[in-house]
Length: 305
Length: 255
Image (tube, helix red, strand yellow):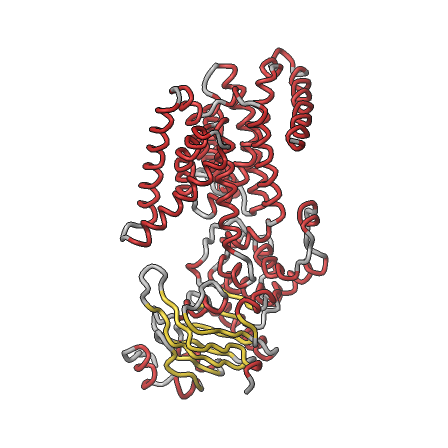
C-alpha cells in the first residue's frame, strides 16, 4: 500500500535521525538507541505516550476512568478472535468493544443493577473469555505480550498503525477543541448551541478504543489504563486551563516513555511497566509539590511567609 | 396572535424518564409571547428542569411538538439563539477553565472557520471578539475576574459569568434554572437589572425560581407547573394563596 510505504520511508529517516542524536550524547548514554529495534520501540512508545496523554484529559474530566478500564479489558476476546481468524486486531477489538457497551446498557436498563456494577461484571467476564481463548490458541508468552506489552519487539506495521491513530486523534482534538471544551464542561449549553453530543461522545470512545488497540504491543492492555489516566490527572493538579492541561499531559506521556524505555533497557526490566512507573513517580511528586493543588499547598505557604 | 410571533409554542408535549417510563411531564400546552419575563413556578420534581431540557433539545419529547420563534427545536438550535444558565450543582466547578474561556463558549456560534484554519491556527478569536468579552464582563461587573479560574468565584459571580455568556451569544431566549439560589444581594441586583434590560431589548426570559414572593415584582407572566401546565397568567393573579396551594399541595408560609 502507498500509505504504508510513505510512512515506512518516513520512519526509517526519523529513526536514523534518532540514532544520530543519541550517538552525540556523552559517556555512552545513548548507546541503547543505536539499535534499530530500540529506535522503533522509542518512536512507538512516544506516540502512544503522547496520544494517551491527550486523551487522558477527557477521561479524567468526564470521569471515565472506569470506562477506560472496561474498554481495555473488554477488547481482549475480540483481539483473540481476530488473531484466530487472521483479521486485523483493530476490527476484533472494535466489535468486542461494541458488544461490551451494548451488554452494559442492557443490564442497566433491564435490571436494578447500576452502571458501575454492570461495568465491573462485563469487563471481567469479557477479560476472562479473552484469556481462555488465548490460552487455547497460543503459548503463554504470547498472552503475556498482549497483557503487558512488548515494546522492544514492535514491528514496522504496529508502528505505522500507532502513527495513524495518533494522527487521527491529534487532528480530532485540534479541530474540535472548542467543541470538546463546551461538551465536557457544560453539556446542556453544548446541546443548546446545536452541537451533536453523540458525535463527540462516540468520537472520544472510538479514539480511546483505537488507542488501546494500538498500545497492545507497547504497554499491553492492562497498563494502558494507567497511561490513559495518570498524565491527565497529573496535569489537572497543575493548571486551570484545558489547553495547557493537554500540553502538560502529552509532555508527561512523552517524557515517561523515553525515560521508561531507557530504564527498561538499562536494567533489563519490563518496558511497559517501567513507563507506567515513571509516570506514577511524576504524579506522586506533583501531587505533593504542585503549587496550587498539591498536598503541601506551596503557593499559600510562599505567599504567607 | 400568529404562531410565528410566539417565543415558545408547545403542543401536547410529554416526556418521561428513559429507564422507568414514568412520566415527568404530560400534555404540556404552552403559548409564550416574545419579549416577556416569564416565571416558572412549581414544587421540586414538577418537571421544570425537564422542560428546559426539552427546550434546548437535550431531551426529545415522547409526544407533541415544540416550536421556538417559529422554528422547530432542531432548526432553532442551529441559529444558536438559546442560552442556558445552569443550576449551581449541575456543573463540575473544578473544571480547568478561566472566566474568559467560559465567555468564549458563547461566541462559539459566530465561528465560521474551515477545518484547515481550525487545524493550523492557534488563536481563533478576532480582536473585536476579545474586546466584546471585556464589554460583557464589564456589564456584570466582573472584568477584574477575567483571568481567574471559574472555581475561585462565588455562587453569585458564577451566575453573572453565565449571564455574560448569554449576552455575548446574543441569545433570544434565556433559560435560567434557580439563578438566585445562594446568590448574594449585590449579584442578585446585577442579575435582575440585566435581565430586565434584556427583556426591554426584546429577549424572552424563562426563569425557574423558588423565591416566589420576589418573582411577583419582576415577572410579566407566570406559569404554574406540576407535571403539566396548571395555569398561565398574570403573576399578580396567580401568585396567591389559593393557586400556590393548588400547585404545591400546601400553603407556603411566606406568602
